[in-house]
Amino acid sequence: MNKRLLLAVTTDLNTDQRMQKTALSLHRAGYQVHLVGRRLPHSPPLLSSPYTQSRLNLWFHKGPLFYAEYNIRLGLLALSAPVDAFTAVDTDTLVALRLAAFLRQKPLIWDAHEMFTGVPELSNRPWVRGFWQLIEKLFLPGIQYSYTVSPGVAEYYAQRHGLRMRLVYNMPHAQSASTVGGHSGYLLYQGAVNVGRGLPTLLQTMARHDLPLVIAGGGDILHDLKERVRQLKLEDRVRFTGPLNPDLLHELTREAFIGFNLLDGDSLNYRHSLANRFFDFVQAGIPQIGMNFESYRLFNNQFEVAILLDRADADNVSAAILRLVNDPGLYSHLCNQCRLAAQCWTWEAACEPVLLSLYREAVSS
Image (tube, rainbow, N blue to C red):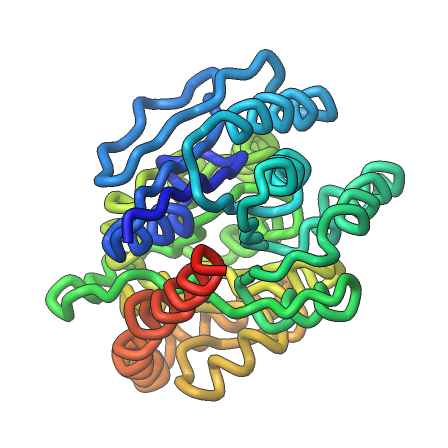
């Protein structure tokens, strides 16, 4: 095939599992893939990969100047890079690559990892949210090839901008059965440590239980959570790992007892999300406690892998933990359901075929 693709994100390439899976699948299908991210002040060296990667060195790392500088530098790269198609990931890479694709008359593919203008960080910032809504209004209509992570996000962009988005879920690679289910006894949250993910509630719940908690990830409220742990005197039972590469994260996940996915229902983005941790917990064979949102409910109706809550307050979360601790039969049932679901909910079975079909259409158009 030998077609050349440039994919761009603003995330850390070492910890962005979706982009790693996407790039690897495209590489194995015969594409020449170049993945572009950004360098942060403490970014570790890039992990080795069969596809090429690079990071943009920026003066600014957050706020309007960051987004402006990133898109200017990305746009200059895209105008000169020898590529046959571009992939913009989320709204914050859209301006540079939509313009480059237009000027060079190359196909543009859009991968929406979330409902960008519905994230909780923008809920109290109407001017910023309005800016990104304007960017989407100007640059999304007319994109022919796009995909996203959940039916809710696809429906939102279909109604708002007329996009016909395909579904490429955040499912993990299939793992061998021998690696599933150590269950050493700790509770686990994995992912971005940001507002709206139920982490303060989870810490409040920890004061009622003796089980240890591991929080694997980094983000905007990490310092606040560590301070809260000190206030609650939970230092001996709550451990922060910081961001982990996928291999270490998978190892940590399959040794956990319960996973948590406590998203804020007031966030439109989270209400329509389908987080990769939902599938990561399933692939690791561990039950989880999550939210009774439509996307999660649809999957949990196929295989009962989770206790889903209508409200993620400390009382409800604590009661769900006690159910799993005190009912070995229920816990065993959810584990068995995870093992069955893990055979179906994999990147190879459910995601890669959709992804490759879309790219074949895009680059041959």
